[in-house]
Each structure stands twice: as structure tokens, then as C-alpha cells.
Picture 1 (cartoon, rainbow, N blue to C red):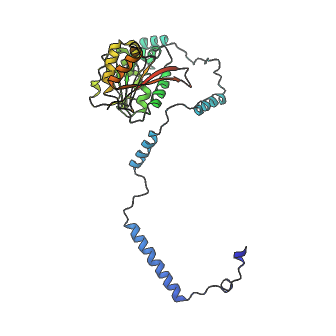
Picture 2 (picture 1 turned 135 degrees about the vertical axis):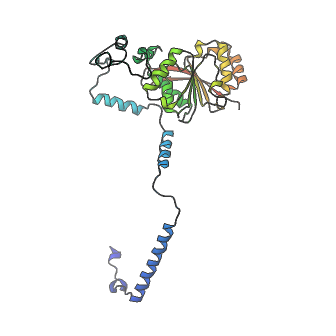
Picture 3 (picture 1 turned 45 degrees about the vertical axis):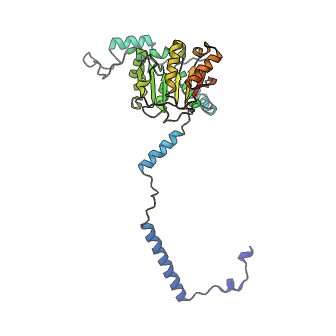
Amino acid sequence: MAFLSSSSPTMQKGIFVSVPVLVLSVSFAAAVIFLLTSSLSSCSCPSSVSSPNDVVGSVSDVRLEERISTTREDIEWVRDLIRSNGLHMQKNELRKGINPRTRDQQLADLIQYKGISHYEGEEEANNHTALPCPGELLVEQHHSNYGEPWAGGRDVFEFLAQSSNLKPNSRVLEIGCGTLRVGLHFIRYLNPTHFHCLEKDELSLMAALRYELPSQGLLHKRPLILRGDDMEFSKFGLDTSYDLIYASAVFLHMPDKLVWAGLERLVEKLKPYDGRIFVSHNVKFCSRLGGDECAKKLASLGLEYLGKQTHDSLLFNHYEIWFGFRRVKQ
């Protein structure tokens, strides 16, 4: 190339450097290196090594971006995995296990043997459980109390969390959480103590507290679950405000007068504008008043109706209708 074949006198003869000049150059370079080293050793610049707090912070930041809803890519991934393992579920039939037992049979065993026991001898077989669990809960009879698949609770969670732009530090109140079919997913996602629930049924509360929370490893999340049927929410804290309040198939079983009393109390606990109230199935407590009267009553409470939304599950043959509201007064 041209610059390698240059015929300039300088490149042909080389460059001559005298000894004194060379000595001065080396001395100057040494002085510069010394000054740089000294300034770096006394610098209070932040270290490049991450501290434990930095690691915790980064994990927390990642969690804030955690995806909630199932995507089409997720569906294709699990479908491919089913195919690659040679599984055939198009008949919707699965082979029974090595020791198939109905729930009734399991319950009879639990009663007869006083628990799940693999000991021999009556003395060894004594139940050492610190907090005994009713056999009906151990065989999960409560999973059949809803008239629809238990797995549908995941769908409800995804829809509500997505629709209300929920984050782990959000606060959620469920009216009528039952045995936590939906609540479990909120409790797992939210920060500790950030899920609250008002439930009136004793058996449902027992299933939630004695079976679902322990079996899912969620006791450390400390959800506040209280018994009550009076739509009284002051027991959750006078200064508590929520990003999401929802009632799944609850208001349709309550007298209209009690629903309106509850909404009046809930408005003060809902964050203005960004907070959401969602009610499933229907809003007959409102439509029975007539369109204009309903709108007036909502406005008098400081609520705005946002319309009807439908959620159709990608996975669990689950479909629900939801009605949304927001607070429009400070």
C-alpha cells in the first residue's frame, strides 16, 4: 500500500535521538505515573465492587418489571414441551396414578389413621402436628366449592393486576376472598402485608388460613384477612388506601342497600384517579335504579363508571365479565 512504500528521506534514514533527550523523556514519564498513582490512591470515588445492598436493590428493580400475564409465546412453549415429551391430551384424559384414591377415600384414610402416617404401632402413629389440619382441607374439598375450576383464580388475578397496572408495592383489598382462590396469587405477587380481605364465611377462612397459606409457603407474607359481613373497613386501618379493590361474584349475593353503603365507605379508601374498583358478573345494584339514577348516585359518591370488560383465558377455559369504577374526587 502507498503509505508503507513511502520514499521520504526521514523514513529511509530513520530518526536519531540523543541520550540527554532520552533521559529527560523517561524522567518526565515516571513523574506523570507517580502523580496519577497518588491521586487514585487518595480518591474517594465509589468502588466498582457491588455491596450486598446493591445486589438487593437490583433484585428489587427486576421484580418491579415482573411480567404478570401469560403470553402467546408462553402457550407455544408449553405446547412444544407437551409434544416433545410425547404427551397426548387431546382426549382430555390422563392415566391414573399408581395408587388412585378419590377424595372420599383419602378422607376416610385420614380419619382412620388420624393423619398421614407411615409409622408402625399405635404409639409411634400418634399425630405430632403442632396445628392439626382438618381432613376435608387436606383432600382439598374446598377447591370444588366454586362451581368452576380452581385454576380460574389465576386468570382473575392476571386480568385485575394488568387492568389496574399493579406493582409489588401496590395495596389490594378483596371483598369476599373465600378460600383464596384468587387471593393466593395477589399475596404471592405483592409485598408482605399489602393484601387485605374481608370474608364472612368461617369454613372458607379456615381453609385459607389453615391450608392454603401454609401449603403455598405464604405465611411470611402476612396478609390481613378478617372476618366480617358488614362492609365495615375501618378495621384495616383508618389511613390505608388501596390501588385495587375488587369483589368477585359477591355483590350479586348482597342486598343493594348494603352494597351502596359499602361503596360509600370504599371511596375514601381508594386512591383518586389511578385506583380501581372492579365488580364481576353484573352491577344490578346499580341498574335496578335506572341508568340516570345510577349515574347520579355514583357521582354523589365521587365514583365514575369506566365500562364493562371481558376476560377470556388463554389456558383454563375461563371467561368473566368485569365492571370498572374509579374515584374522581380527592
